[in-house]
Every structure is written in C-alpha cells, then in structure tokens.
Image 1 (cartoon, helix red, strand yellow):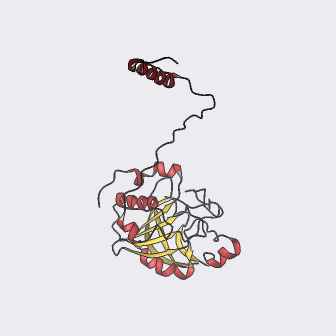
Image 2: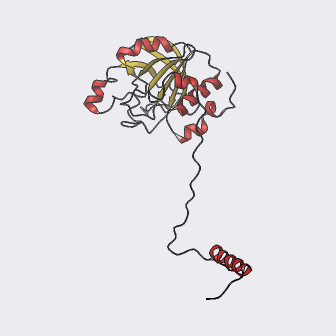
Length: 239
C-alpha cells in the first residue's frame, strides 16, 4: 500500500472532488422540476374576517373585487350586494352587506339565467332574449309591483357586459323556484330569464335594504370580464 504525504492526501481529495463535480449525471437520475412560486396571499382584511365571509363561502378575492369596483364607481351607499356566480346554485351565494354597520344582512340563494348553465353558470350575455346572466357592476334603482310582486329595477354600468339589462327587463325579484325544496327535488335552483331572483320569502326585506342607489356586483371567474372591466382595472382611489 503506498504511503502518502499530507500534501499528497490533499491532492487526492481535490481530485476526487473535481471528479464528483464534473462527472455527468447518471442516466437514472431524475431531472429537477421547478414550479412557479405560489401567488402571494391577500393582505388581511379585518372586515372580511369580522363578517365571517370565508365561513359563509365568499372568497376574499371576490370581496376585494366588489370593494374595488364600488370604490371606483364612487358609490357611497352603505349597502353592497355580491352575487357570486362561481358557486353552484345550491349554495347560498348572495351576500348583502351593510358596510357602515359592518354587518352581513342576508346570505341566501340567488338564481342565474337558464341559458347560462345548469348547476354553475358558465355563459354570460348582454344580448336581449339570451336568457343569460349579465356580469358586472349595477346600481339599484326604484321598486315597482310586477308579476313577481315587489321588484327592483337595476341599471347595468359596464358597457358590453350588462348595459342592456333594462331593455331585457332584468330586475331583482322573488321567485318560488328559488328555495331549498327545488334544490332537493332537482339538485339545483330553478332558473330565471337572466334576473338575479331570490327566495320569495326574503325578497321584500332584501329589496328594501338595497334599493335606491346601492351597488350590486355579479361575479364569475370569466377571463374576458376580469380583463376588460373598467371598474376592476381602473386606478384605485382610497376611500
């Protein structure tokens, strides 16, 4: 066995280190797959937490969208209504929030248009006779008595997405097909002709709470809408 000096041992060690660092990878070695970094979490929103919106099924992203649009609209009515059409109709996906009182007034069912989809709406339109839901921000107007009883007129504020709602007679009204009995029978809510119909028993108190100028936001994760909405993409002013 050869005898090595201290210097010789250092040379051997260096040679081994060089061999390990320069040797080609084994053919059985698995390549490393890099994944994109996770999207950063939204900043904590005390109001979102205080209202228990996560427990009620509303994602913070949707809540922040609604606040952004309301802010960019310059709407100062204390009540904000969100219809979250990313959820199936079997979920209580309507949220009526009093921002001043910091209170969730109503969390209940809301229907979508019959041609928007079955359980979860996937198609949206601003076209007359489409019988589809229209996305975007609305301003509530006055009430009237119609075939569904007390009803609420709406004004669509987003060109290309909901500005034809008055010509289409899209209003907020109560309907007997928006109830848990329909969910049990059909596995979904009944469909409207595009109106955000609510449970008939709750329609009057909801309408009275949101009438005369409050903001309604009808949301779905529709790429075209999210990209083009003026109120979601405008410079955000502070309240």
